[in-house]
Amino acid sequence: MGVPMSVPKTSAQNITSISPAIRAGFEDWTPALVKQEIDALKDKPGAMLPILHAIQDRFGYIPEATVPIIAEAMRQTRAEVHGIISFYHHFRTHPVGAHVIHICRAEACQSMGSRQLESHIKSRLGADYHQTSRDNEFTVEPVYCLGNCACAPSIRIGDDIHGRMSPDKFDRLADRLTTSTLELK
Ligand code: FES
Image (cartoon, rainbow, N blue to C red; front, top):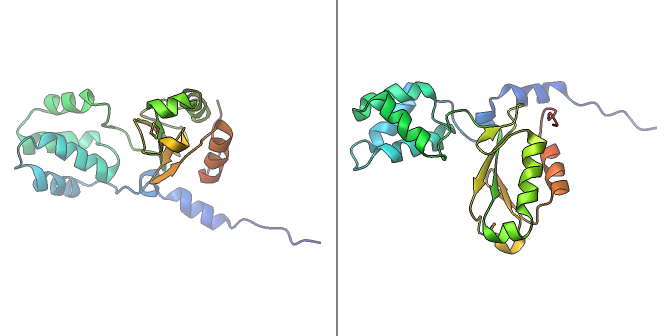
């Protein structure tokens, strides 16, 4: 007779108590860290976009509360900074989930069914592009070629590229990555 397996509760609790952004590899933002990024770039020509990129790359998004800090440092109004952030789809103003999924929308992947795959992923996670699933596990983003065309359709989750992706394969992958129950639509 086998010994019943017990899941150590504490390890699950430890994982879920860490913020999704940290699990995705980003840092929690502070005004001092934001100023550090601004100071490193503000004297370069056309510094605003590189600063916004640097902030998003470090913290996973551009928190609303960083806008006045950026505006003051760059001698622009808050409305001007908001205008730039909202003009570019690339910039997020909400924290990312624990896993950022990039779905390739370029030609080779499209010809191998990436459109059906993307609707499956969006429907399974209940999140459109630039959105995060309600359990904060997954953020969905589009990408245009991951350099893995021979194994289309491709997606990237974090730093890992997954080729020949299908809805079934995605479901298995998502189940493995999820630490809390996904809300299925
Ligand atoms: S077209 Fe999708 S990886 Fe190149």
